[in-house]
Length: 309
Ligand code: ADP
Figure (cartoon, rainbow, N blue to C red):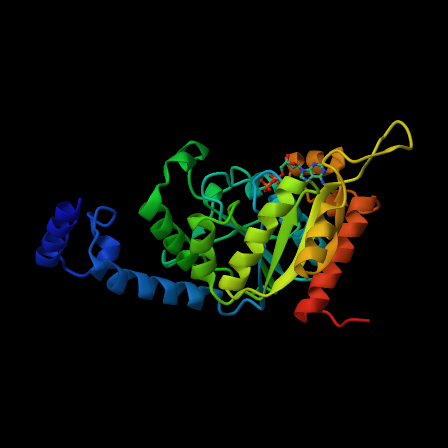
């Protein structure tokens, strides 16, 4: 392997025209030159694209399926109801679900007139959505690997033109592995991070890893949201704790991270997601919506968008 690497480096050194972006051997190239020639300008381009956005907030979860995307979409909906201009960056290259949840599935990000950038898709509530799911066919998601994923991400972030935004909510890939850290490193100056967990013990453990990741990435932690907490049975008055109870609060007490609230498990949350309408907009009168609205307000105050009191 070392020898192969050496040969590739020599080949690249000899034939290299220093134009990584247009190079056919880009993904095979192991030359350290690539990092100097391509990575630094790519990161600079991303910073430039994101520079005019007032607040960039990352949404993390240590595990998949706990409702990270659902919470992202509903916080976006709640902020829009408060008059904010909001975008969602779906940075999950393997399982992008934001297009479905915001009702733009099947729509494609379009090229700008000068063909030098891509415009997000705008949903019915005015939420701007950039997702790899809005650039390529669904069947193509599965094949991103290693370097391809990282450079694909850089290109995606560097070429998306958001326009004026108050909030960019970044739906990170699940877990705390390379995929997630790549996005955090590329976006850099995050204004805040929110962690999503379900109440069970297992999920709490992984929140600890998310906290460590945020500390390493210097992302200010806004707090933990517990999702799929107590469910109220629709046919009797009983409350059911499907995924145990209180885990979000426990993890906050242990770590000193702020607790933002608990969203109940409600089948209408799921139905609204499948329908592509943020739950908070479709059912503003329901308990879960009121909690989402309260959390969005708290975040907006913490970050400085709204005045407290
Ligand atoms: P993640 O982004 O963490 O993988 P999703 O947001 O895709 O998770 O949610 C997984 C599934 O759970 C989706 O079908 C979603 O509609 C459903 N879901 C999420 N939160 C709730 C909730 N509070 N009540 C009912 N269903 C929910």
